Length: 150
Image (cartoon, rainbow, N blue to C red; front, side, top):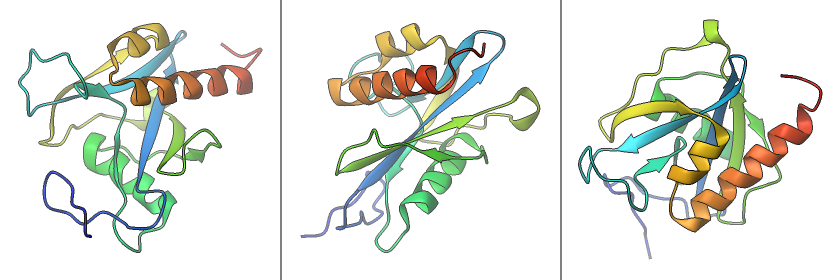
């Protein structure tokens, strides 16, 4: 049975079905990029309201290409992506550092705004639990990798 995204795009039958990219920067404290989904209105704060850039993988699309595409489509960013071992069989998880000179966030029509927030605030905002858990794993991964740095 074929599965499709909210906008009618086919989803890969092969695992993983999608990707998330946790974008971070150090200015000097750590901040994470969250996007707010527009379809429930600007005041909505429930499940799926705030997420890192993410989306479904197209049939035949390489996982890394899907991560690169989703980051660019949803946030207008082209950053160096780092795969992590933290995803699930169904969903891959990447991290990407945005240096101040590297980016201007341009949200797509699926989103109405973005925020840069501390990891603690990001974890507080993100729902449902499956997305929150992946975000917590990414934050722990980044902190472990960058011990001794900002």
